[in-house]
Image (cartoon, rainbow, N blue to C red; front, side, top):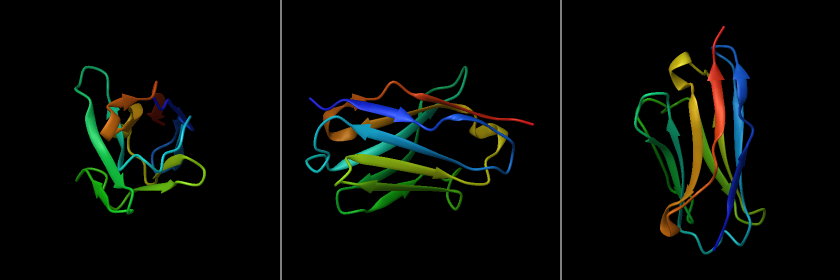
Length: 113
């Protein structure tokens, strides 16, 4: 069973950037779809972006053009590059191995001035 650990969250001013990382304990090559989700206070968890083993990507409308998901199978790591951050991007961000229904513990992202 793969385990996922997110890192890279923190506080940033509006317009700033952060890069989140999700490290898998085992080989990620066998996992077809990896995803990033987020959950803001009082709201349901929502899908942010996904990436397949073949590097096909999909994004929520709210982050298109600002966020980029990528994966490095050799390093067993998935990334989420977040640019032009807005206060409404504030949330706990979770990594998920979608095939295996496995979640990471989450990392907090706060966007405020």
